[in-house]
Amino acid sequence: MRTPAKNAARDAGLDPTRIPKHIAIIMDGNGRWARQRGLPRLAGHVQGYATVRAMVESAIDLRVQALTLYTFSSENWSRPKNEVDGIMRLIAHAARNELDELHENGVRVIVSGRFDDLPEDVRAELRHEMNVTKDNNRLILNLAINYGGRTEIVDAVRAIAAKAANGELKPEEVDDELISAHLYSPHLPDPDLLIRTAGELRISNFLLWQIAYTEIWVTDVLWPDFSENDLIMAISDYQKRVRKFGKTADQVV
Ligand code: IPE
Ligand code: IPE
Ligand code: MG
Image (cartoon, rainbow, N blue to C red; front, side, top):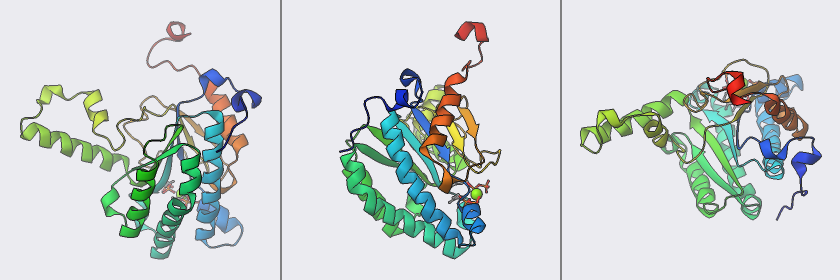
C-alpha cells in the first residue's frame, strides 16, 4: 500500500485545505510528442500511459478525491484504424496490468462514455477492474472512454424523456439536479479544475455540462512530458483564483 508523505500538498507549497476535490484532464499531445522524436504516434500513447500512472500516484499523495481522464473521445474513432486499435489494446492492457496496484492503493475505477460500443475484450477488462475496485474510496479514477459531452447529454435526455413518457416524472420536475443525476457518473461532483495539456484552447467535447463553473488551466507541455511538478503548478494557480459563481468578489472573500 502506498503511504504518502504525511503532507505531500504542504511539502509542495500548496494549501492542503484547498486541494481541488475533482480534477479533470484533457490528456493531449501524445502524437506531437512522438512526431518530435520521429516515432510512430502509438509510441506517444504508450508514453502517455506512463504519465497516467504517475499522475494517479500524485493525485493520491495530494489527496485529490476524483480524477477524470479524457482517454478516448467519441470523435477519436475517425483516426487511422491502426491508431484506434493500438489505443484500445493499450486500454485493455492497462486495465489488466494496473489492477492490483490500483486496488492496493484504494483507487476505485469507473468509466464514463458509451461503454457498449467498445470492443468486447476492452469491456471485459474494464468491467473486471470496476468490479474489483468498486468499494474503494481513496481516489475515484474516472476514465472517459468513447466519451463525448454532447452524446452524454443526448443519453441523459433520452433517459429522462423515457421516464416522462411512461409517467415516472413530469416535465416540470426536470431541473439541473435531475439532468446531473442522469449523466454517466452522477455521483461525481463537478470538476473544480480542468487541465489541458499541449496548448489547444478548446474543450473538444469534454464534460460540457459539468464544467459550467470549473477553473481552466492550459499548459503547452505535451501529455507524455507532464509531471507532478506541472500538476502542482496547476493546483497552485487554482488556489490563487477567486471562484465567484456569479457573485461579486466582495461577496465571496
Ligand atoms: C491525445 O493525444 C490522446 C488521444 C486523443 C487519444 P493526441 O493523439 O491527440 O496527440 P496530438 O494532438 O496528435 O499531439
Ligand atoms: C481530445 O483530444 C480527446 C482526448 C484527449 C482523448 P483531441 O486531440 O482528440 O482533440 P482535438 O481534435 O485536437 O480537438
Ligand atoms: Mg490531440
